Image (cartoon, rainbow, N blue to C red):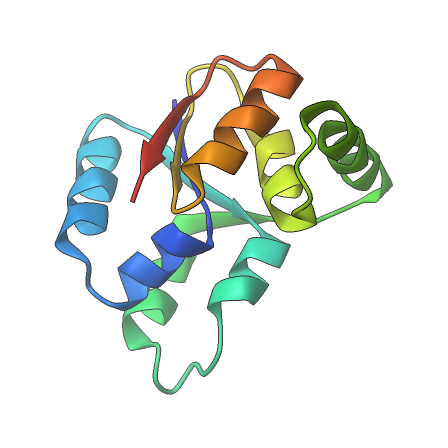
Length: 125
């Protein structure tokens, strides 16, 4: 299992949100890998000098880049789900069965995962 983090989860890490921290700690205790996509990091990152908590957490998070295949999958997910956020679609494209997706956009991510037919759990943060 992996914890797939959207921008809302990364912002929660940055702000010291106890719920997000607790979910991540529980996942890590269970051996979960933390992952996100590079565009999601771009949504959350503003100023490294002021985002010390997020900067400290980044070495524990696998930040996945975007390639042509991922971009095409994202576009197809947008068409299939009726959603419009490319960054959410890119993140949904990285989810695997059994993953937990920590998101502040639970409706959109749930629709994208359903369109992709991936059995991942959406957790609102």
